[in-house]
Image (tube, rainbow, N blue to C red; front, side, top):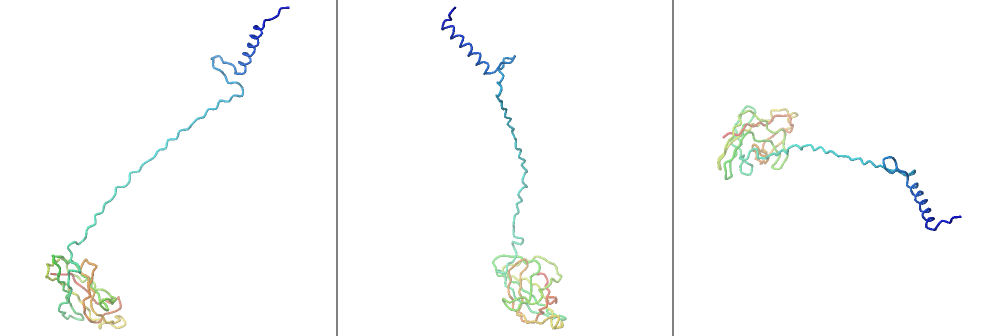
Length: 209
């Protein structure tokens, strides 16, 4: 009987081991690409790419409003003295001139109707209806320092109205607003007015030179 040498025995063992290793790693297909062994899982992750589209709407243009004084040359109450001229009688009424004197240091303009109402006192409440505008032509009047302009006020003799319609009430004078001004002044004129606002007791015309 022929005895194998130890070297040949070792080579045989190594050959068997190589065959087992190749089987465990999987087979090779015809293209030479190694196929995965059974139980192996190849996971493919598909990453979706989302593109956000932002739509920019042009903003509306900013509107710039320039604020200017509507009557920069108007006469203000602080530079006017308001007095009453001589009243004249008419049928059932009195016509009373409102006199505006420029006490300031500049030329200024009075244009349009003054505001006029009866009041119970210098700081008292208004009595009845304010003066209604009574025709006339609105013309700008330039008033130099020391010069004057006038506006005619017509005051109805309220005793001609029935007492229940008028509601006669003593008044101390007028509250006067120059045209285009929110400032006012009290002008003494003691008389009787109607407390009922539905009664026409005063009317006023535009300022004239």
